[in-house]
Amino acid sequence: MQHRSTPKVSILVAARNEAHCIERCLLYLSRLDYPTDALQILIGNDDSTDQTAEIIARFIQDKPHFQLINITQNIGLAKGKGNVLAQLAQQATGEYFLFTDADIAVQPHWVQAMLAGFDTEKVGVINGLSTISGTPLLARMQAIDWLANLLIIWLLSLIKIPITSMGNNMATTAKAYRATGGYENLKFSLTEDYRLFKAILEQGFEFRQLMSPKCVAVSLPITTVKGWLVQRNRWITGACEGGWYYQLLVCGLAALYVAVFALFWYAPVPMFLFWVTKYFIQNLVIIGLLGRLRQKHLWRWVWFYEIYAFVFTGMLFAYHFGNRKGVEWKSRQY
Image (cartoon, rainbow, N blue to C red; front, side):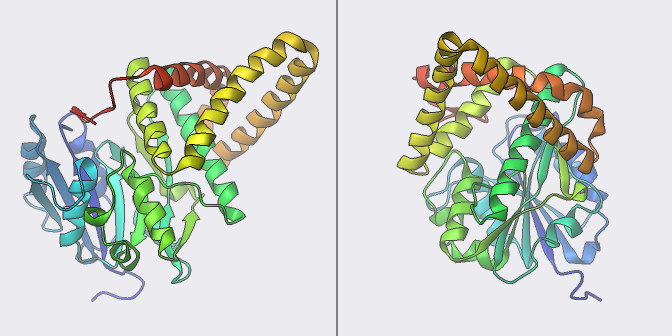
């Protein structure tokens, strides 16, 4: 018998050419500590050209709460990942929708941890926490980077300034999602999670950024610098679709980056003292965050984070403003 403490939940996963990772994702979803009669797991195969569909079908054949849905056409305004999620949501029967990606591994209590954020009926969208697995230095820097940025989102959310949500670890109420008309009625965006997040807030719902270690999801790393630049360029391009103020923010951050070089040239001593102070305060805050989220294995790598952030941010701005080829996403050009 289903009780109010275990409401019906639909988990939505978009998958396109994910043969290298989809079984890992499904394995962790199959280990969720949540009643299967209250769980619906929908996986959308987005016209994959590899073995993604076959792997999914084989894995779920004895798991009736899993369902494979092959996506062959677009509906409404939706394209790409948003189109997959639009069609999955149409078949979702849960009171809550949980979104994750094909390269994500979730924890056994992930569902309960995410649902805990819906503490009032006004809350329409929840953001979990995401980090990166892997031992190479680039993977460890990405892990710290994701969590550090989620800390900023959390702090701003405490003073009622919602910034964004992340589609690899996000939850909405079915009511809030449907109030937007669904992805098929939202203008296409390269950052479909932000588009939905914004639409839900425009309907009068509230946002929660969670900070519980139980809602930490682990993604596979981007393994090359080029791949990192392509990913982050998509994020920036998607953010700029949010309006002139986001475009102004991106340009302002780029200008600030250039100004730092100038200030170091004209006032090296004050800037050096400012940088040292920032370096230690920032790193101690991040270390505290990692401890709270049970990510202590990253502690010793925090001291390299400032170098990573400075160098890679510079490369990203150069790549973004110099890019004239559009954005590549899941083997498609936008």
